Image 1: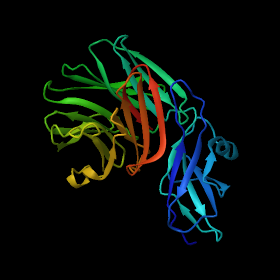
Image 2: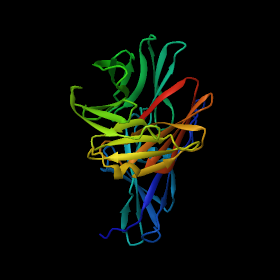
Image 3: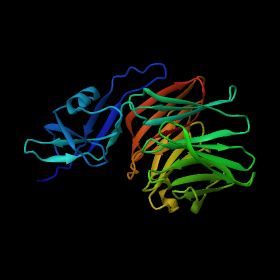
Image 4: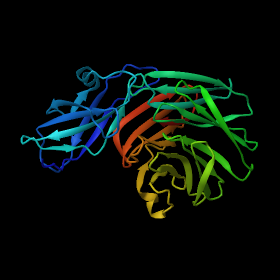
Length: 353
């Protein structure tokens, strides 16, 4: 059967506020200019990326309610689903969408790390695709240890990175209930290297980001036993670029840079590097601009296991109370799906499954 060349962007439309979990959620899509006008659309759903076991013909519409999708396909809560949209014409020819979203009810799809140094409690907050709070974990800590980053793995596990700023960092590995299952410590030379963040991959490997704030960053690639297997260094221009975060998947990694030399609206860059090669030509591969000059980049993450084309960038407001806007992106382009979160504590990090 001949394949048509329609191009789609699948968008999940909603916004979420900390004080309001009642949402109207829907899937929407807009066909590209190629391939003519479709006569109908099918949503295909599966529990594995790019492998769809269920199909629903929704007719000639470009928006569909999530509740109807769950009801008509008898989808279950607590399951991560991969959703893509197909178009067809009167001849029955169909075309696959370029992108794919993940969605889950009553299961952690996003993870927020907050800290309030006044009460010495770190909060890890897991939310589902509809913004509902799934879990909250309060972790007391003393003034000797400081949280740096949190990660959410594709299987619901994750990690929490601590630093005592005296030469020791500790990675807590979290189970799906946000309890520490094990930990790993590393020693470093104070005043030379500074730990920034840790990311955990679905195969048990991980990456640890270091920055000397003098023009060099180093990525430690950790094996499934959390031992250093190899590292790679990259140079950057001090007073021009600042590395906000780094994240990785099985396929590759992504850097989130902030061009601090441009004010008040500095540019931020995504760099997806499948081979972990520091080719400077790729520094401008994906590019985004500050939403407004009242926001600063917080963190970025990759959706899915093997596909680095889908990213999330989170932005932190400079006002109080703190607000975080999470933009969902496809190849560096905002899709229109976003979360808007307010919080009474200092937001440190955001990650997604």
